[in-house]
Amino acid sequence: MFRTILRRELQETLSSSTLLFAVVVLTILVLLSAYIQARYYRRVVEDYSLRQNIHQVENSGRAIVLIRPLPPLLPFFNGAYDSLPDEFRLQSDSVITNPLSGDLTPLDWLFPKVDLSFIIGVLMTLLTILLAHDTIVVDREQGTLKLILSGPVQRRTVLAAKLTGVILLMTIILVYVVLLYTAVVKVFSGGTVDLSVANLSALAVSSLAALLVFVVIAALGVAISISVRSPLVSLSLCATIWMVTVLIWPSLGPHIASSFKTVSTWEAAQRDISLKERELIQAELAEQKKTAADLKAQNVGVESAWRQYLELRRRWMERRNVEIGRLVEERKRQIRDQQFFARRILAFSPYVAFKETLGSLCGTGLESHDEFLAAVERYGQQEFLPASFDLLSRQKPWLNGAKPDDRVQLRPLQTPPPALSERLAAAAWPLSVLIAEIIILLMVGIIGFERYDVR
View (cartoon, rainbow, N blue to C red):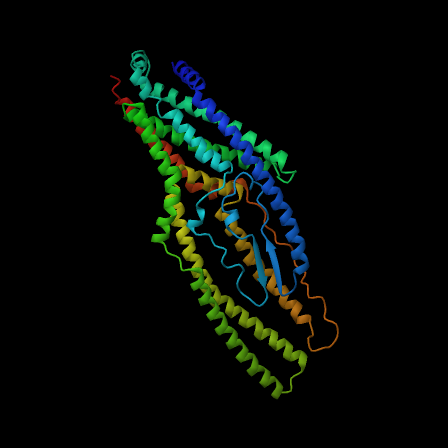
């Protein structure tokens, strides 16, 4: 009986003009979006190579620029990549990793680009609602449901067949959309997109996450279809909930988070940091002058005085690291608290949960940016500053001879991509929310259908 009901559902849906129109629209949008994203990624790759060449010439013992490697799945999901800086300047006379303003507040999450995540999370969830909203209520209105339940069949079997019909169709459409998008990106990216086994695996897991979103939306549509007596009412309720969870809540949630978890303005933080740095620089200069006067009075040699200057300079850099780093860390903590709160409440939207999962899997989310920034800071403390001081100690500025090359020899910054298991661990919260929503909605649908009056 399950197969009979499932076959009937598939035949009715496949013969509907709604599905045909939706597939045509999706095909057009996928072609346009994939083409635009592929050309965009191609330009980004060219710009990345150009910037690397420029910075290799500019880099010296006093300042270097590190560029974040391009996420290979950027054409599929832009995420927060375009909203955050991808260049960081390290300076030997500064303890701040520039640009300090490179932080993302929840309000920056508004107005996403039309990439694969938008097509799946917005357009295909809307199609899922259109397919699922009348699965029960139409059969009840036409009297078909009463006829079906009069036979030797359990209600759960009927419910499972109808829900499976919607999910199976959306799975087929999802595979078609992902394959078409991938093919277009591969063709028009000029070979810049790396579709290795690891990246294809991440893309496959992203598709499974999309399937979880479809199950949530389909279970919601079926549950509402059970609870009402009119297809029009069911469509109105489903459309309203879809608009709230997919369109309104992702835009409203960041404002709520910004109200409950405030962050000091960048101008105020920059003023505090500048005042503290000026205070420390003046104190350092005062000590340097005093030390220079003492060395002069003791007739200390130039090289010995130079070594003492470097040691004094090193101690003050460590002090600036501690005191200014405390101010920087306080602002980072405020931003992390606001982001944590916003991401927790926003994940109750299936669309946002899907985007969060994609960000972790594609390397375009907040975690990937934070990991690279942490790697830059470690690189500055463990590689650049020690090498810069070593280069400075070998220079003899009091001589009139030619200055030695001021370029510092450093190992390249290593930022290996995380394994797929680590990416999934980072997406544990949104995935767990999706699974919890599926369980709750299925229980509501089952309980409601067991008590459903087919008359």
